Structure formats: structure tokens, C-alpha cells
Image 1 (tube, rainbow, N blue to C red):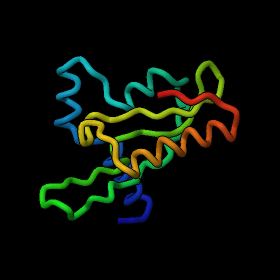
Image 2: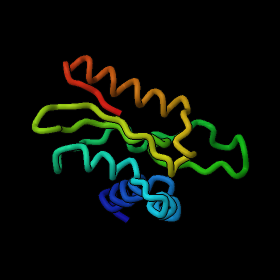
Image 3: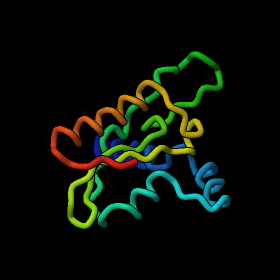
Image 4: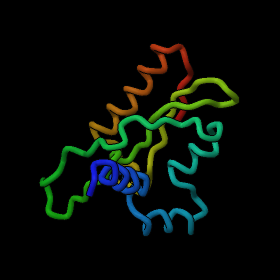
Length: 123
């Protein structure tokens, strides 16, 4: 497998959040995923994700602990009506959207970037 194929595979995995079964469960409840909510909020094609491959640090603490890229929150920036905004969307398909240290750091990083660039941030 080439490096490009490996990266594309990891991106596809990260974009599934907690997996297709959990995504389907959200849809059955009439709810959208974190990425679907961001797609509706932001101008088409403007979203740039930050921290897609961040993992929870609890690996190995329990035998049933699953690891998901992104650690339950999608963070990044894009535009709304052409204006730059920084956003985060908590992903219920990963740990029920529970907050962990890496998850919180991603949110804080987005808020810091918004302040540095004079742009609004939104959850």
C-alpha cells in the first residue's frame, strides 16, 4: 500500500467517527452526525479539519476500550456566507460525545485560533 493510499484509508476511517452502526443509530433517531451538522452550517467545500487523527490517551486502560481517530469532536475552520469561522462539533458516535483531555485540547485550540485570527467560533 502506498503512503497516499494509507493516508486515504486513515481519512476514511476518521470520517466514520464511531462507525457505520453508530451513524445509522443516530439517523434512526432523526439526528445528524457531527460532520453532517458542519456540512449544513458551512459554505460548501470550505471546511478544513484540524486534529482529525488525535486519539484518546486511555489506550490499554481497559480491554474493551476502542480507539477512534478524532476523539469524539470534529474541529476546523471554514466560511459562513463567505466569512471565516472556527467550529467544533461533538460526535455522539464516539464515546457518546464524552469529553477527554485530547478532545478538550482540540476545542481550546480552535478557540485560540479564532481569537488569533479575529474570527468567530461556533459549536
